[in-house]
Length: 165
Image 1: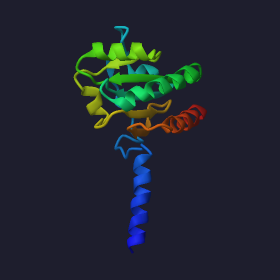
Image 2: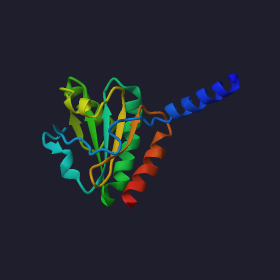
Image 3: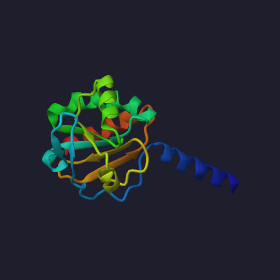
């Protein structure tokens, strides 16, 4: 019995470490929002209907976010021309820190500012980073919490799958 419980715990730990969050959003329409971008233009999620959209919630104080952002930018650069969009939603109180970090990292995807945390609440963000993949119809298909090296390979598989639909 102890071995069975130990194995069950191991299976649960592996699943939890995969970064796939059990979210009430999966299978639901992605909550629409509009936020000011780093360029000063307001961007609205619904304007991206027809694209596969990755929404990545991040903060400047989050080490895994800093590690993940250049990898996300590679995915964005590679798949943008075939209907993939990425919106980086920063939750810092001070957007100047986010601008500095995004500039230092050289990200090319749009960076948006959720200084009042309204959008992060809509998306039930309670960890950093949180990555949400939305299909072409505007439905949340995948939600990931956290980041560890290798997660980008799972993102790649999911993006490709959604682009083929």
